[in-house]
Length: 98
Image (cartoon, rainbow, N blue to C red; front, side, top):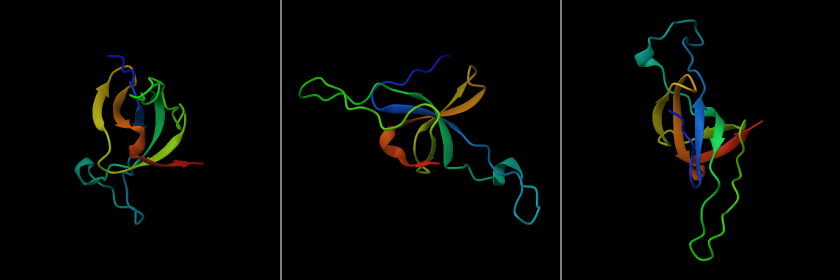
């Protein structure tokens, strides 16, 4: 399956979660919190303005490291990207990390 975002949507690959605590305790998969950081791997063309048909330019670009809200996006398994990816609106991103 090849995912291509439309409108103001973006596709993000979530960072790997920490497998152990600061004290060195190994956590099982069920106990690991899903990180709210990731890398943008695809960007849509921008939101369409219904008044004049123009598009608002996207603020994010492919390769940006971002911080997003915990409830943002829908997860999909993508064989081409080798794992799970998130599809979300650009407005669900809180910040770009440097």
